[in-house]
Length: 295
Image (cartoon, rainbow, N blue to C red; front, side, top):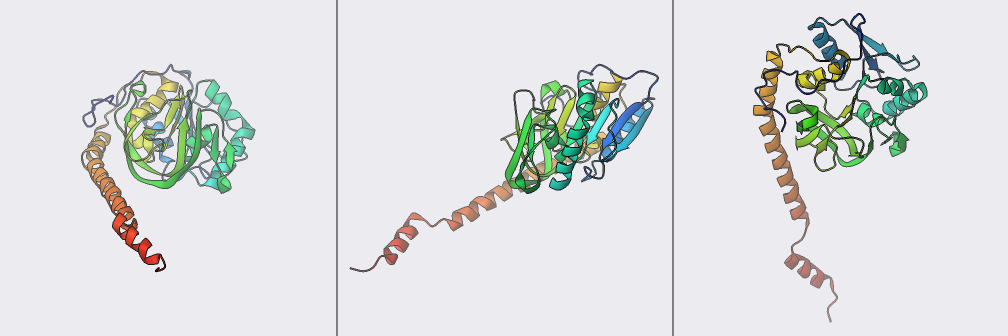
């Protein structure tokens, strides 16, 4: 694990990306299709980035973009939230036709996709009716379907390259996302499902990030918010995150153990039910004998 779980001195950790914005220009936070991709409070991520920039004296502006509008090519951060299959498929088609997100990514803008937004940043995902649908190809990931929907609290130990403390939030998705060689996970799941590949959560490559964390994720994980901001602003001065630290300590000290215990209970009950449905060898033999005609 990269950092202490509960007593972080500062959330401005990790190697800061090179700043790409000029000192005299506002930092542009582009909120992509908020009415299509905005479930579970994901719109809060834009507010978090805007506030954390302003607290540092950085002029920032949130620019919502709706389907049919041309996506700005000169934004500093682009945010895509969660959404249902039909909305996700429509958003992917619009963004492929527009082409602006790929231009921004190549220029070094930070791209953050949450849940459905994460999936459509990849190579393919399952759209309406379970049809394999092309994504934007900004992350080397491909998404299929989980056997059972993943719903509940999630905690993950971040990979060292991310340079942030424990990741916390909640998930609600049916996607099974498989990473290719060109992407690495955000972390390893300690509680929850994440990518559904046996232990990883999310993916990132350079300035492009995807995750199943809701929360909003950047409110519950200020270090990740600052890493995203760092792509535009460079090294950031630390902020007083006492309130966020208190919330994180509660989540890690109370919610995480309770969620883990509940998960173990569900697994045990599931195993017991499966056992009860399976006849024992003796019972199966007797049932077979009784079913045979007498000589």
